[in-house]
Length: 284
Image (tube, rainbow, N blue to C red; front, side, top):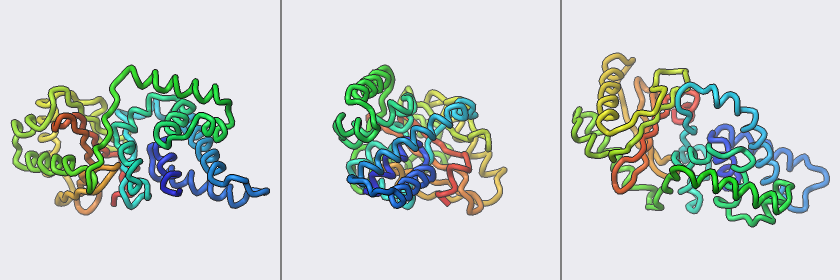
C-alpha cells in the first residue's frame, strides 16, 4: 500500500521529497489516532489527500511567480516504490504530471483517485468527506478542463520500462556529441516543444522552445557552452525514471541537468529538461 500512497502524493504535488513527507505525516497521524480508525487504509488516503490539497493551495502563489516553465521533480526508482507498481507507471510521466497542473487541487485529487486508483465515487466521497454528487461534479469539471487541450499519451508499458524511449535518448545524445544538426532534426516531430526548468536558480530558457530546427540549434549551442565553460568533465547516465527513462548529465561529478523525452509516432514530441538544483538533489 505504501507504493500507492506515495504515488497519490507524488501525482498531487509533483515532488518526490514532498510526497514522502506527506506519507510519513499521514502514517504518524494514524499511529497517534485515538481511537484507532476502523479502516486504516481509508484513513491514510483521506489524510494524504487533504494534506496534498492544503499544500497545493498554499503554493498557488509561488507557482504563479515561478521563473520559466515549472516541471515536476524527476522520480527515480530509488525515491519510492511507485515506479515498481506496473499499473501506475504510465501515469507518472512528465507529460501526464503537467496535464494535471491544469486542475484545481480539489479537482486534481478526485481525478487522481478516480482515474489513477479506480475508486468509486462513493469511496472518493467517503475519503474526502464530501457528498457523492460533489465528487461526481469535481470529476466532471476535471475531465472537461482536460478535454480542451493536449492530453499526453501514457508511457507504453514496455519491459524493462520504455525501451524505445531509452534508445531515443541514446541516439539523441550521440547526435549531440557528433554536432549533427540534421540528425537531431530528423529525430523530432514538426511540432516538438522543449521545456527547461531552471527555477530562476540557474540559467535556463524562460519560455518553451518550439520547432525541431530551433531546438537542435539551441541544444548544440548549450552543449558546446557547458563543455567549454563548465567546471569539470561531463558524464552521462541513463536511469529508469517516471515510469520510463531519463538521462542524467553530470559535470565534475555533480548533477548538472536531467533530460526526459515524450515520443509520438516514434519521434520526439516533447523534451523536458530539469536544471533547478533543488529538484536534482536526489539524482546525485
